[in-house]
Length: 210
Ligand code: URA
Image (cartoon, rainbow, N blue to C red; front, side):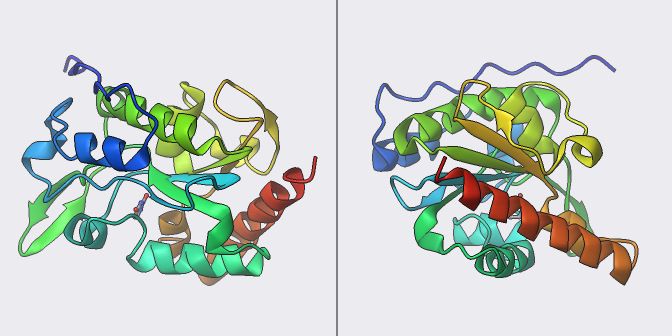
């Protein structure tokens, strides 16, 4: 099947996060706005030194209009705390700003965004980065890393390292997505991935003083 192409989102010429969020609320750049409740724009400290990028809002985030308020967010907040960081250090966002799902009975089942949808949404991420100006970006999972690096990543072998600037920030770090930890095959795997995520967030903290 041919890859569906979308026109890229066209953010306004502003770095004001409120202006951007308002504009993103009306985004029809790709098709995901059709089935989502609302655009979920990033949230957090305006001039945070660390910007965390997830994949896309989940069911809870889609309803609340806020990133990382569901189970993955809860796990992420614990890891942030364990790494010695606070939410004051952080701006949270997603590579894709609408929830992609398919119905399964009464449940809305998460679907991975396509490359076309990731690309269409990237201008919003670029604008958030331009506004927040973080020193370190932590990409959580493959979708976030694909958007940040603009190539397909290998999280298994690339995570946990300080990747010197691509274009967006001084350092990029790839890590596990908290949902991948929640979906781990067993407890041992979950604990190892969680320890990795905490260690990657500690690395982000350490890089702030470089
Ligand atoms: N997963 C994400 O990637 N982002 C959210 O905001 C919630 C769950």
